[in-house]
Length: 89
Image 1 (tube, rainbow, N blue to C red):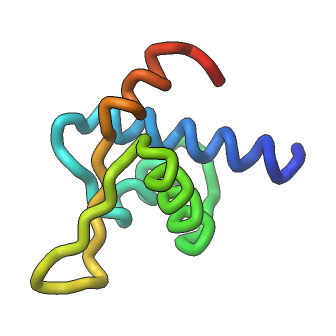
Image 2: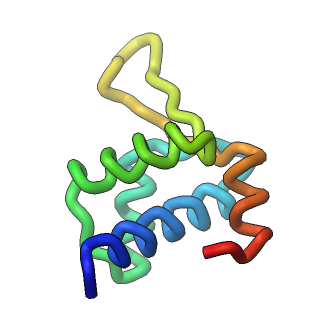
């Protein structure tokens, strides 16, 4: 499987996980656990890269805790939900 195809699968899995949690946000660690439970073995660096990409596309929002900058949460946006509902992937 090509790297680009793996990126697409990872991004879609992230969006689906956030959709399941919506309207709540999820800590990055929880997203990683969910991906692992779904059979996707992904490192933290690759996950953060995917989250950053999806945030730049306005499909999710990333929020850092005001108490600890290392604590990051992700939340599905309306654009992310529309993308999933469109089936355009």
